Length: 187
Image 1: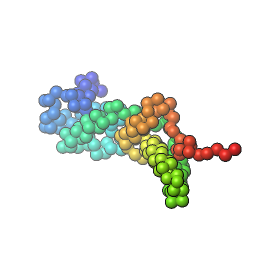
Image 2: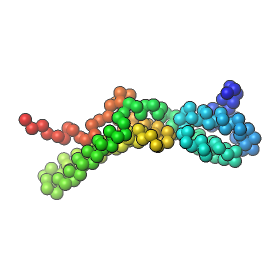
Image 3: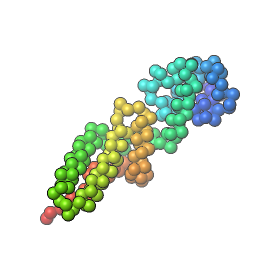
Image 4: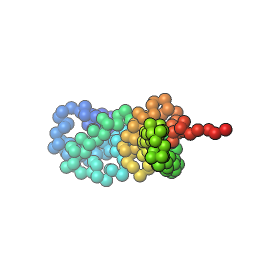
C-alpha cells in the first residue's frame, strides 16, 4: 500500500486528517482505495473485528459514520492491551468452572447469614470479596471468549488490568477465584 494512502488512513482513523478530507463527497469519491487501506489498518490496530468487515466500511454512503465509529474505538482502545495478551490467562472453560465454585461459595455465605448472626459483618465482608473476585474472573472470561468481537475482548483486557494492577497483569497472575484467606485450616 502506498505511503500516502497509509498516512491518510492514519489521519482519518485518528481524527488528525486535514479538514478537507472530512468532506463526505470527497471520501465517497475515493471509497474503493480508502476502504482497503482503512480496513487493513483498522484490523491491524484491532479496532475492527474481521467479522465486521461485511458491514463496516462496506458502503460508500456509510463511510463518514463508519469513520466516526472507528475513531471512537481508536480513542477507547488506544491504551488497551493487544488481544494476544488474553493468552496470559486461563482458558474460558477453566474460568467457567472456577466461577461456578465462586457462586457456590457466595451462596453458602448467604445461607449462613440467618444462622450465624454474630458473624454477620464477617459474612458480608466475605460476600463482597467473593463478588469482587467473581468480577475479576468474569472479566478474564470475557477476554478469553472467542466469539466476542476483538474490541470487546480488548476492553475486557483493559478492565482486567485495572482490576488486578499492571504487575499482576503482566505476569498473568489472577487472584484466587474465592477468598481462600477465609478458609480455616484445622489441624
